[in-house]
Image (cartoon, rainbow, N blue to C red):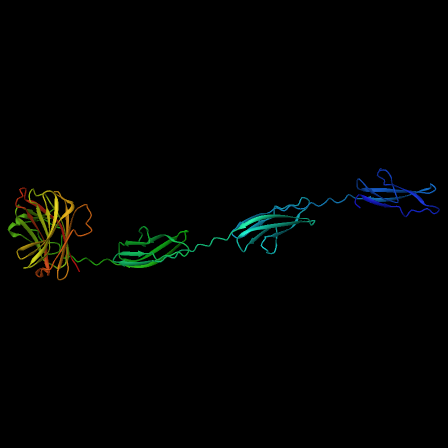
Length: 465
């Protein structure tokens, strides 16, 4: 067996006696071995002559030779070496055992046990998806071409995949008023987060506007597509489109307007809207129109007036823009805007008192017949004027059965006051009727630097509904 032989000479015999001894020569120069049976291991494979010499009880000998071939024993098989890597993505693992090896042969098979009681998977590589998050032991068992096995264990932790982000839902309403639209996207929502931003495209080539609500004014009437794009807190977007039709606003009805775009002497001529200016005829030389202004050269103690008698309004807003060429040195200059003069009855007026120290006071007055009554007076806080300063005075009349008169005045280059600076009401029956509009100036009789040139640059009267 391999390099070892078992020798048996027990069948030897002696006809007239007994076999007294046995001597084995295994033919490899090793000492002889005695005994009816013997075992001998050769040092090298080959064919050897084995000689058995037997001696009987009287000293006679006999020998027999046998040829035997011995071979080297087979080399012992080396077990394979299992090597594995396991990579997790969410609940799925990618297992790779291709680095496993067998020093004296080949890896014949691979068996993966993923530690979750599922059937084993074969192959050098394998993929497996777990049913639940957790830490598992992954065992790779490899078998070589001679049946030897080896195993390696890897620990892997798998996690549940993130819940996919749901896109937000854009919701918009768009309401048009003339050329302006009010857009509201506050009804937009995000089921699994928040709406992080809003972007409005108004479809006219203008830059996008941000914010849950937005206002936009178009340059021309037409139908436009308004697109709201919302983005959630994870970057997903959604858009909605609304069609909106905008129209040009109706033309504003103007009862009186004059920009004094003409040149006249001894009169103010005819307004653009409102007819001919009626002036104080006794002082015609003190009236003129030049350089875009209607001019009254008011002397000390004099009252000059200009009225658009063809105008007939009840409730209205009259805006006048004016300046004076100097500050009266005593007493001050009074500038009155008359928003309603009822024929043969009386009038309401707002009077700006331009005082010699630059302060301004507004008075609201009513005049019935020849009697003038002060309704309310108020100093205008924060306003001072100097020669040449351009002032705007706006006077409003409103109401039914009684009239509320309101006024405000401000200097060019400053914002219009948000609220009326002075308001008063009156229910004099004779004045609750339509009337004309006009202006009037008076320079204090104590003034010594007259005449003062009052320059009316613009007058507009817009009737109220």
